[in-house]
Image (cartoon, rainbow, N blue to C red; front, side, top):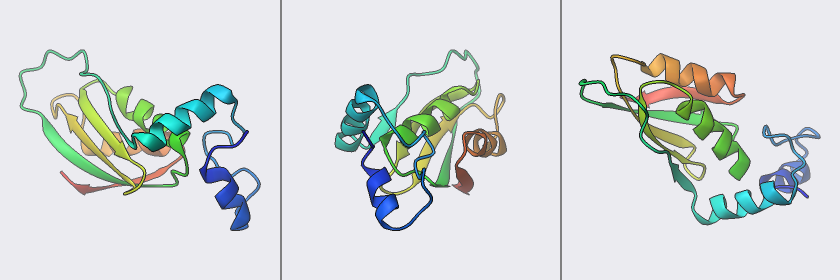
Length: 126
């Protein structure tokens, strides 16, 4: 079973494994992709930080997301950073809006986490 973005990428002649999330997905991945396509933005739970700093917001432009699994991987990459309070990942707009504690994490670290997950990211606003 393939996610929604994979067959379209194959028809366009992209490489044999267009989905950065692995390309071939099981039933669980397909169900997750359906849910994420139905609800394209994801919001993560508040982080475990107890910092007194006022949260800042960064908007990241992200390229390379082709399916709901890609959205989940970007979301997990951002969620793994200490100091991230919330994140919204929007595949349709190729954006992520991240609220973070500037005393614990900076926009460059947000970009690095997304890049390490296999996607291209840059800060568009903060």
